[in-house]
Structures are given as structure tokens and as C-alpha cells.
Length: 426
Image (cartoon, rainbow, N blue to C red; front, side):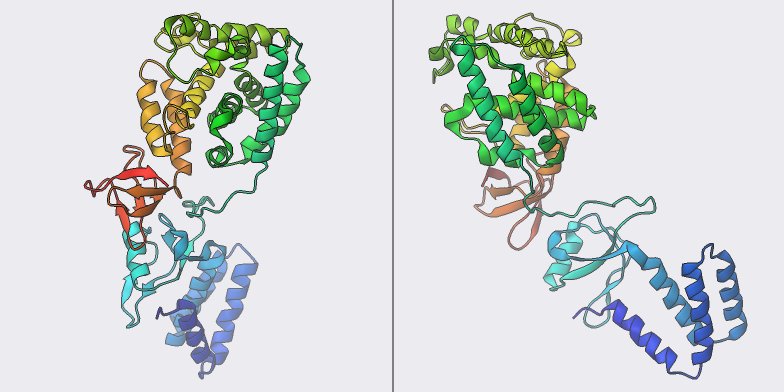
């Protein structure tokens, strides 16, 4: 059973107050109260130290030390459950075993091996330092509760909006700019305030509605990338509009080409590659005040190496919105279920989009997306090549497929245990 440090302090104080030095302790406690209530406190420390120096009183010294320990902990000390896996947190109190032997000293930064050892000894709760000296959190606890967000609701609404818009275009009707702007007013704030947008997308998307859901998914991912690179909210809104409408030109492509389950022939490919041009014409007719929206729709299939379409632009001539939409477009495509292949899991998708970056996607924007994905991947459930099920604890930026994981009874660093690997996501 763990020895509770606060219990030891309380017993020490009780013995002190019942001793013949009670009156002396009251004096010290008086100084302590003033120290914490009336800063600056340098003068009180001097008085207390001087008093101790002339008092030759061991109990007073013990009480003074206890008082400073109590004061130092203050608001920075926090009791947390080991099940939250506080890797990287700094221990605020020494931890002892049942025989009083020191297991971990305070101020040590917790590693997976520390947690494994404590869990094996049935420890449940530890005390950590909540903030560092700059009042910033040391690290984020690994908690995987579902976020409270309206993103799934507004996502479905946006899908219906884009479906209606494209149906109107196919029928030759004029579409209203206000429908798009109203959708942006709903969805952009939810994207900004939702941390794990991929979790929401993964739960909502269905294979049979890919065409329309893809437009909204690209909008969500593009805005999240824009947020990651610190775009102002006004620009995020314009980026979101361009991303939502990036494939609107496909309404001008014959349905048999759009819905063809197999590979397209050369003639069909040439026709399909006209959709950015068709789309830019449609968006131009909507007369958005920001003309960059039209440019972004036109250029979203331009490649950094100049081999994109329809204009074969080089990297420096591609609009930033278009570069972001291109990355979001590819990422959504590879993480979506298609008739001809299963979707890529998050970690696999990181490797795949890294390969796509070479000469194709903007490497800086791709790196921002990967960093975001690595931040949300903890908590993902995976299956190992041994058949064991596990949960991702810490991502590995150098080797995304080899993170730190936790099985039912242990932590495993896949970057060190090379014989093990992730087979698929559960």
C-alpha cells in the first residue's frame, strides 16, 4: 500500500502541536500565514531563518520545512489517475512501496516504463506538477473521451447543400451564393473548435455517398490545415468555400464517367480533367467578393512539379488555397472507402501521403497535416501481427507505423521491438 505523503505531513504536524514546543510553533505558523497572504515575502523568510538559527529547535525546523513544502505544492500539484497515462508529466511527490522504499523521486519526468512499473504494483493515483514555471502545461494527459461537437450535424447539412447545388447545376438552374455562405457560417466554427475532425468524418462517411461527402470532407480537412498554419478566421472561411466547391465542376461531367467503377480510358480522363475549368466558371458566376476562391477551384489539381492540370503551373504560381485543397483532397481520398479498394487507416495514410508529396503536393502543407494527424492518433485502436489488440499511446513522427502502444498487460515501443508491427486498425 502506497504511503501517502500528505498523511505523513499531518502526523508530523500533530506530534509537533502536542509537544512542549507548541507556542514556538504557533509563532512560526504566524509567519507562514503572512508569507502566503502578504507578498513580497523575502522579509518573512529572513525572519523565519533567523529565528530557526537562534532556536536550536529540531521540531521547529521540521515544521518550517513542512510549511514550505505545503506552500510550494500550492495550485501546481494535481492528483491524477494512472489510467490517464500521464507520460511526460513531472512527478510532484516521492512514491514509496509498502516497505517505505523509494520507487520514484519527485521531479522525475514520467516515462512509459515508470507507469508500467507502478501499474504492476497496483498503484492507482499519483501527484504531478500541473504547470511549469511559465504557467504552461507540461504535456497533455492521454484522455480519449468523445468530444462534444456539432460537426456531425452540420456536416450532414453541408452534404445536402452540395447535393442540391450540383443537382441544380445539372438541371441548368442558377445556384445561389447565399446557400454556400450560410453553410460556411455553420460549419467553419465547428471545424475550428473540434480537435479530432477525422474521428467525426470517419463515423459519418458512407461509401454510397462519396461524391458529395468528399466535397464536405475536403472542406473540413482544408480548414483544419489552415487553422494549423495560423490562418485568420476570415481566410479560413474563404478557404472553406473554395474547398467545398472544388469539385462542383463535376456536375458538368457525364454521369457515366463520374460513376464508372473501374479505371477511366484516355478519352474519359481528358473529359474528367476539365472539371476544374468547369468549376471555376460556375464559381465565377457566383460573384464572391474574394476572387481567390475562383483561382483556388481552378488550380486545385495543379502539381508542384508542373505536371498537374489544367494549366500545368509550377509550384510558385499555385495559389496557397489550391495547395491546401490539393493535400486535403488526396488525404480524404485515401482515407475513404471506395468500391475498388479499402480505405487507409490513419497511420498508413501518413505514409501514403508522404509518398504523394514528392513532386506532387506542397511538402510544408503536407507536414502540417501530418503533425495534426500525429496529435490526434493517440487513442486509435490497432491490431498487431501477433493478433493482439492495442491502443496507440504516443505517435512516432519518424516512423508513423511504429508508435508506442499499450496492450492489455504492457506498453510496447514498436520502434524498438521490430518483430512486432501493426497489421490494421480496428
